[in-house]
Image (cartoon, rainbow, N blue to C red; front, side):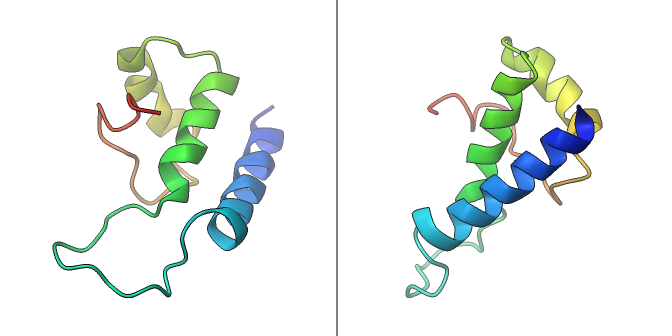
Length: 83
């Protein structure tokens, strides 16, 4: 299932980044540089649901092992709560 999940998350990320979420070509806002794109937390949340990790603390412990190779930086705890 890992290969299929990798392919799904990669395709979802590409689609969200290219067609759905705001473009990076928009004027740069003031403030610190962003560490995550808009598509990354969405993809991580989808992976959490598909892998059936309901409690966030369990997911934050499992995420680096399950999907860490797909993202250079995983969202910190609490970032996915509003989704």
